[in-house]
Amino acid sequence: MQSTTQSANAERAIIREVGLRDGLQSIARTMPTAQKLQWIEAAYAAGLREIEVGSFVPARLLPQLADTAELVAFAKTLPGLTTSVLVPNLKGAERAMDCGADLMLLPLSASQAHSLANLRKSPDEVVVEIERIVDTRNTSKSNTLIEVGMSTAFGCTIQGRVEPVEVVRLVQAVLEAGVDQVGLADTVGYADPGMVRDLFALTLPVAGARLNCGHFHDTRGLGLANVYAALQAGVTRFDACLAGIGGCPHAPGASGNVATEDLAYMLASMGIATGIDFDALMALRANVAQWLDGEPLHGTLWRAGLPKTLSKQKEIA
Image 1 (cartoon, helix red, strand yellow):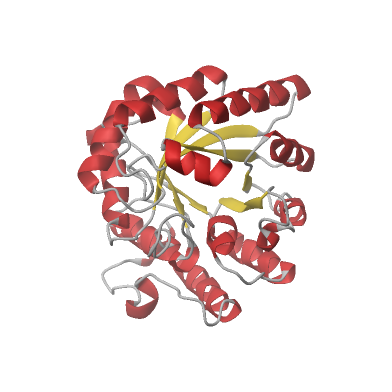
Image 2: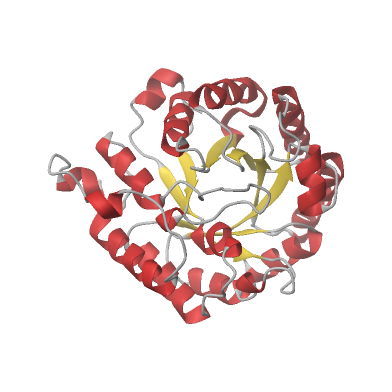
């Protein structure tokens, strides 16, 4: 992790596009596989090099994501692309490893109430499951990385306040279990920049460089401000959804994740390279808007466009 001074002058950041999972799981309709494949290909062509393509959950629960294995297979053909999937349990992890996913994201809620509602297990029971997954990965000699996403780290619509010391305790537990990296997630849009600054500062001494992702929702309009606070803490990798889609079923009124295009613009305007071509990215957003016609979409860059003060070098740096 970088120091605050270094991060203010970060040269590069990574955006992981999670719309195909976090976005589509929140939408009742099922996007045809052919369109998802176009989404992956176009996102890659636009310069995104990490994409969460789906989740290995039972199809009866999320039919929208039933084609994840096919999406992983296609994504694996694109050179230099990190293909990640979300898995809720050991069975899902085994499928992810069998498919050769580069990274599997394991959700762990810091909120007892949210964990029971979402996974029907307490946080500590989920930690035990994560230990099993790590052991299975290591025994099988799989190369799939394991990342834990610490959801509801900043608060919960069911429980309310989540104690920061509980977040740190759980982060320490999964790192001791052998996971490769962790991220902090504002699942329900409760965070503000001060909370982000303080929680990352509290967690950093425990996690070090393995704390390397911020996942923010724009439910109350603070998504990009929270990203900036995380940047100051030294984080240079962030989740985002094209068109700001997505959200948690336990977050009433949630407007979705930080929009990929808005985040990419903010970073480029600050001189932080992402490798993203804005023309290609906005063309993809227009396609997604057609594919999801009638669904609420978010973000602002698509309305206003790029300012003339943003040089082409900054756009694609």
